[in-house]
Amino acid sequence: MTSSPPPNRPRAFRIPAAEPAGSPEGIAAPPIPPSQVRIVEEPFEIVEAADGTPVPVAPKARAPWASMFLIALGGLVSLGVGLSIERLIADLFSAAPWLGTVALVLLGIAALGLLGLVARELSGVWRERRIERLRASAVEALASRDHSAAQAVVRDLSALYAGRASLAAGRARLDTLGDAILDVDDRLGLAEHELLAPLDRQARQAIATAAKQVSGVTALSPRAIVDVAFVVFSAVRLLRRIATIYGGRPGFLGFLRLARSALAHLTVTGGMAVGESMIQQALGLGLAAKVSAKLGEGVLNGLMTARFGLAALAVCRPLPFVREEVPRLSDVAGALFRSSEADGRDVRDPS
Image 1 (tube, rainbow, N blue to C red):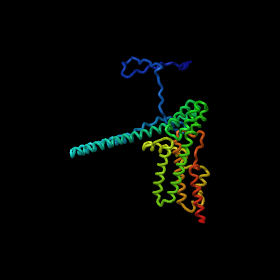
Image 2: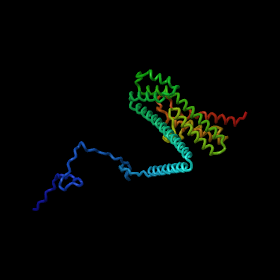
Image 3: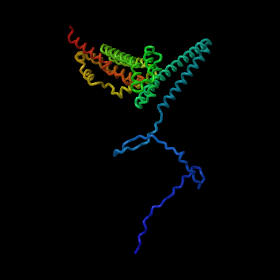
Image 4: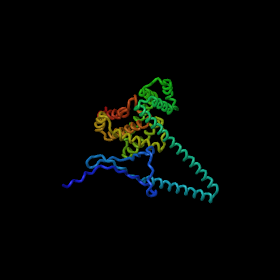
């Protein structure tokens, strides 16, 4: 009888250590202590396979071609402008020494003005970031129920408006309370009521005024290009006005940051979405919209301006709304519907 071969038994293997590059053959690399081992997590993008299973995929490295192009183009333009100015001054000196001196003086004045513009832009961006950090700290304090963080937010808010005489009484009342308030919501709500409630009223009034102006100009202007130009102009002026009310002094770069944030907030919160009652009024606009298409267009442009103003208010405000009522579209644009309905009644019954 032929015996079957014995089954394979499990055996243990020792994996030899990898030899480092450039080391002599036969010399193993020294072991790495566990304390020196670090695990580095690479970012991955999660995608779905054909069967619906999530699969991590390493993100593709993107070359900064646009940044390289803009930096190189800016450098070339700067070199060209500098070389042109240098040649101009040299030609003026060769023509007449006093002309070259005048050119140097003008160049110095231009350089001083450029430094002033840069300082103003940096100051505006710094104040905007200060307001953004203050709002983020308030949101974090509310989420974590941190009393010390809430105290720091109130101190920073008081320091932000230290130069405003109209808010001196509110700052004094906050200073007299000290540590008497322990609840985070109460402390931030009181600071909001004392310091931001008057500013909220000014911002709502500015939004309502801009919406009325846009509505009136759109209803009376004969050209569509005039409507578009005035809407854009009013939006720019309104954003600057609201930023100034809440303590910001945006320059050109700061204004671009605020405009981008306001448009992003407008997109996240639903764009032109309004409440059901306002939608019914906007769709029906009473007799005024039936009598005059320009009047209805003016009301809708006023609504757009008011909606953008509310987004700008949310972006420029140093604190989130804690105890104060969040302004609605009907609070700043309700007069548009009342005026349109009154105009419709006047058209219907001239007597």
